[in-house]
Length: 255
Ligand SMILES: NC(=O)c1ccc[n+]([C@@H]2O[C@H](COP(=O)([O-])OP(=O)(O)OC[C@H]3O[C@@H](n4cnc5c(N)ncnc54)[C@H](OP(=O)(O)O)[C@@H]3O)[C@@H](O)[C@H]2O)c1
Image (cartoon, rainbow, N blue to C red; front, top):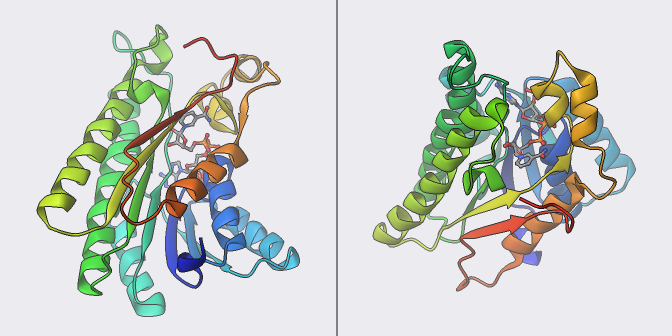
């Protein structure tokens, strides 16, 4: 990770869960991390934790609603002015809403598409633009996908979310191909976790916290730090190694 010291990473959805763990871990490795989310106060707390832990990098909180394109574009302009640009983009923010295909609300489907697919694509395009204009040839774009990006689990509450994550699989591979055609050495990777203990299920089942708690009943769920460690592994790969997709699940998970 030495080559990333002092360089700039954007982590979306850095307020809680996997994004918060990734942001802290990159700061621990000496990176300058812009962490964005709507709940910026939570990121400010993480930034204070990084300082009190003596981490060598910095966490810079930025308030952004990723479902609003103007917010995302303003964030990239701000990063350009304040920190020149970004070298690593971690598209982590994402959500599932319980909106089945036969009865779900269109607004819920749109919210999932806006954050899980459109915001990820806008951030990717803007991150590439930032790397290209500064002639950064070793940048990395990492998408936090899901095992739901690879198989359809029989759960009506997750079917639309699953479709949005299949899109992430296609977007990551399409990106890899476009980067090769553009003759850059910028890399594209997706990380596809199974169940990770975060706020995710509590947000999915916000009307039914018991159902959310049952999702995490296994003591052997992945922890957010397991995904942060995977990001570090991906960023540590030597320049000639392209990691396309890593599936990471709890040992006991059946799907
Ligand atoms: N937990 C799992 O079991 C699991 C499994 C596989 C894949 N994943 C994927 O991992 C990623 C992170 O999930 P998590 O488990 O860490 O979930 P989480 O604890 O619910 O965190 C979700 C993050 O996304 C951010 N976010 C959501 N909507 C946003 C918006 N409109 N604008 C800005 N930020 C927004 C949230 O920030 P604010 O609410 O503060 O804006 C929060 O930081 C997601 O892409 C998810 O699909 C999770």
